[in-house]
Image (cartoon, rainbow, N blue to C red):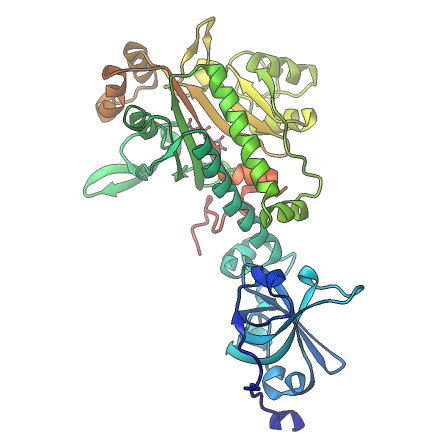
Length: 455
Ligand code: 4AD
């Protein structure tokens, strides 16, 4: 009853509050500020109420005392309610802990939106340790959690960092289409769709389009969604993923390999040195050590030998022989044991895509590369491309692809061909490695995989 009588009024004699985001707290010590956000944590103790406020850019402990703590409106507060608070940002005395080592001494606050209490309360929706598929149904709420949001922030930093690296490398960004009528990585993973009465697909890779941009724009890259109707339910396969792809002209296979390892190491360096993302990587992956140049190089045939020497069998449970695909489990075991990034090169023609160039010294194998990282395995696949028209046409024959649909791609070999190569990097895979996540599903805002297309 006493509480019902207390209403909260702002003291007009106080200095005007400066509106800030929580990322700017340290620049506003001792200042009266106005902050908006969501109640991330809430605790009442000895006549005081502690709110940990979240606004996406940071966290802030806010202290309500006196009438503010005892007011009726304060007794109605719940997790995830939105509030606007005003007060002075103060450094916490030694020995007390809160995010950023600061606290807001609140002198006035308003409720913007009360979240439900009771059965429908936030903590009943998102329960730690709940069935992953229930959490995925509630993904729109789960992303508010500290771990998922941290990964998403590292993701933003990674995309920013790699754009910066491409800029430094003189590679420019293009945006190829997602709706296409050609395949790049085999018919079995194509998502088909009706396009005004014609058959079309969701793109598996923007590679062929990037190749066409070389004569127009020079070296190019894109950050674009790729779609794969994967049948495999593995922890590193999504049906839609963010594909970072680059294509470079007039270079050798060795140039391509050193470009790839340079882009990866520089990007990672920028992320771990980023004031926001760096500490988050430390928090998510305390043991993370940024990779050093040059990466270990290993040929496919050497990998077969390594696998056989370590009694790791192929998919049929037999020793590996030339021409076998190195499937996910074997690949990861090898990479985890070796424990450093590997550039795995020179795969046999038969297990790779139609566009890959053969090695001059051994036509059974191609100038191809996978980048393997401990805990995840393959994060990048790339190659030099066939630059001879006739050889490319043979590739189409071999793969039984309808040449007419690819006329625009084939024209690249007619109107000024050149040695060129490129690669695709899976954003969610590099993040799973960087942030030590068990699955790429944890590295996507709304992951899409077999049976999951919502929310
Ligand atoms: O090895 P992939 O299939 O290569 C290509 O698509 C080439 N056309 C790329 C190019 O040269 N421009 O895919 C490249 C990378 C893989 O190394 C992996 O990181 C990621 O894309 N990837 C996937 N990530 C998540 N879910 C899937 N289903 C993925 N498939 C490939």
